[in-house]
Image (cartoon, rainbow, N blue to C red; front, side, top):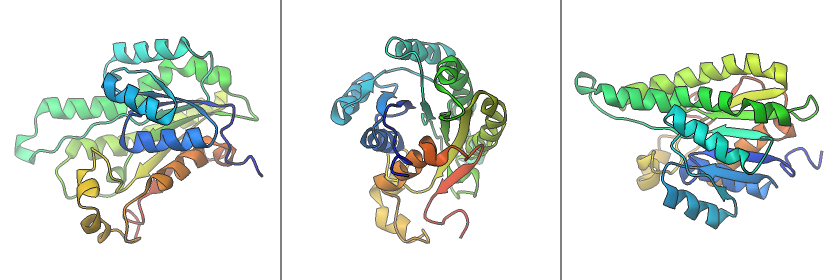
Length: 250
């Protein structure tokens, strides 16, 4: 029981790890004993966060197939196996219904749905190499409560992509569990980040609309991610853990 939430001896790769939720998860994994690699499109920010946290930066643009292959190749220069993959990189786009641009739709859907699938497939050999029945490898997709409940903002592809990612997680889990790879997801609510500017800049107003009466903290996100990545979450297959203070269900 003392090792139930330990990540000692495990390797983790987190996309979108230079800021926001990705950075929260990276810091939590490091504290739990994992060797962490973070990736982000902006090289300077990625390296700065890696230096701050004490992990390894692998800058890459995972919005393209070439970028995903490059990230996998860079990771292979360091490790032969991968215990935990966190598909966190994502995008959002806000525009009125009658004006919503195709480029916004495609950017969000590709990064939020296509990338988690194909990056997982690209790194499947390393995940399979790490996985055993006694200690399965983990794939954790970062969804959103916007994929569960309707947000009043006009972020059409974001809501659709996160709902799709939740169901994609189930479909991936059904296949990957045969290789001792456990796939699950987290649906965050209001956490302060560059993507959730309202929670970052208007925390008190946002908190007033949350049943728990506060926005999420770094520890809330790290705890959920550590749970799913550790022995504690080995039997959580295909499920989406909602971490939102009660917004989606209360």
